[in-house]
Image 1 (cartoon, rainbow, N blue to C red):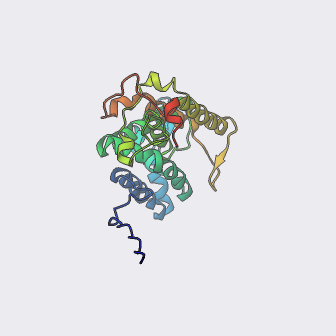
Image 2 (image 1 turned 45 degrees about the vertical axis):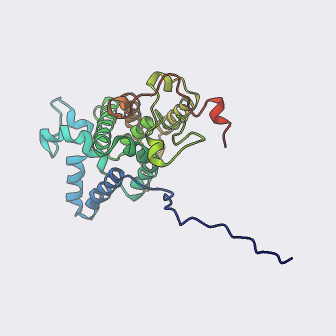
Image 3 (image 1 turned 120 degrees about the horizontal axis):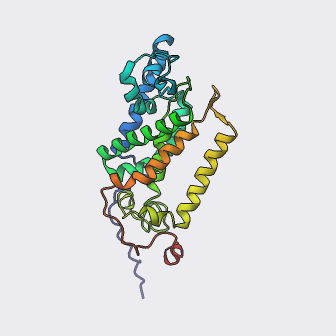
Length: 265
């Protein structure tokens, strides 16, 4: 009896695959803006220093005593520098460090919020970081620059939904857009979640180590403005609901730390 060759399975046409890392347009624009602003380093030294003075956050600018130093930018700089400082960076390693953390957390938030809410959120958390820095460095002359306060805010906001079942840090998740738009935990529920509390403990521990140990980063030895990090983080954690367009989860909604979910592979 003549044997028949086994039929080969018909393979479906190649389906489009989602890239390993895709950046939302809003985040791409934000990173591009930071890169363009950093072109200031190509300016002559006196103009570069003027740019940092006008747009960097200098606590002593708000000193009302007779010894107050007049800074470039005048009264307007007392307002806009609460945000513009976050677009300035010391060097490319400074930019790279912030972008590294923005890729996962900023992407999740930009997908969830959309462009307008995302940019407003970055501005608000930057201002919160500047306020925290001002309260703890009242007469400091050195300008503070960098997006770290806003980056910290994105991390805090993301943990409000990233551990929920189906989102980024759960054991079962869908595509990036779906994972970014799961219903978030309330602030009270988040602060009772073991994974969220673990994240908070590690994050605050690292920042305290940087602050108490006076650890410097970068080739120029610039110190870390850890108080600004905490200010941005707390603002992101507590103000998240004001920006979130996704309806809130039901109180009984499962999260990634539940027994059923953690058993999946």
